[in-house]
Image (cartoon, rainbow, N blue to C red; front, side, top):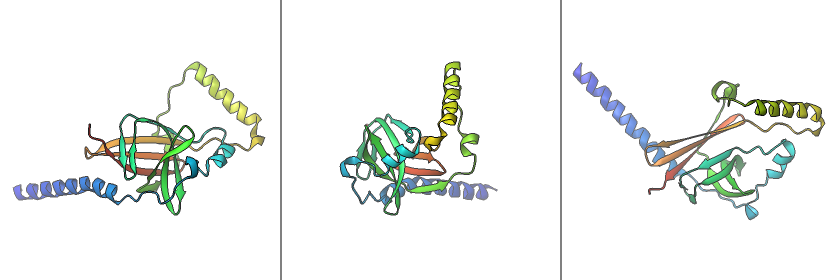
Length: 186
């Protein structure tokens, strides 16, 4: 009985330490973007603004300096958008309308149907906010001829993993995008 407990604890410890090293391997295996954007302009931005009724990019606020292969992302507010460029997926960090940082995605997954309705908490709205929401819905019913649609649903989660790495997961439309960063030691 004791030897069985010892074997199980060794296996758990080994699997945990192997999992902890995965973040270091993931970070080291990231390939930086092999392209540059002219003056930091997102080539698909104009299409997005014509297609959607308002900006389709979720806002991310970072309070830490994030380190990735090509440099540091200082604390601040960024609009995030996933883009496929040259056969690979990247997350564009936009600031003041231009792309400041391009971070590779190490894994992407499809989301199950109704994911946002089932898993994302809905904010409680004040009476004024409810009135504004209903007015917005009526506005879109009247002006359906504009062919503009609501932007894709989006959500962002972050977590400090293995005490040295920061994982950002962007849920955007029907996919989930994973990125990994090193934390700057203060």
